[in-house]
Image 1 (cartoon, rainbow, N blue to C red):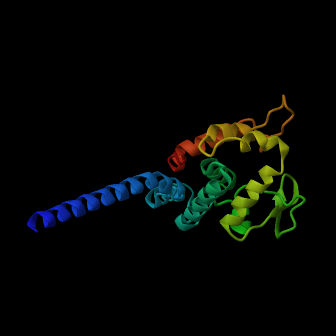
Image 2 (cartoon, rainbow, N blue to C red; image 1 turned 60 degrees about the vertical axis):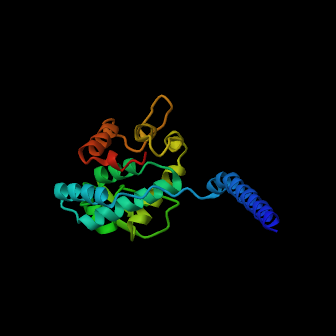
Length: 213
């Protein structure tokens, strides 16, 4: 009787071991599939870095830190959504709006100097510019300004080279926005020094630290 009981215990133990081994193997096989199906979480924006850069810009021009910080965050969100380099967008905005303090920005929240040319049918702000009264686009939020600028670039065939650049290749993007007279592409600005000015702004205010690697 004792021998028979021991035999049953041995058989039961062996069965449990086989069951446990099979379960572990099944979990190991299914683990890679689960990992592959899990969504990749986007890299979080460093709040301290954003605040520090916004403070540097504020100290230089006098604009409100919170206002600058909001613009940076909207540009970074656009980078995530549209794969365009936020660093370049921020640099251009600082250059064109004198650090978010220009007369146009104060009255129309327009940091890129966007004119109210067709097909724009939104609000406008008119001011004296280049010898005449000129209407400019007026925005309510930094998000509107950033996304309208991206739409403007997408609507111009000569900016296609810039839009082909990766979100981390700021230099490629700046070159794509620059005038290229061999291709008869006017670029974003007629000033031949404009690309270098944007580069200097990016370097001066350490905007490259915002580029997602």
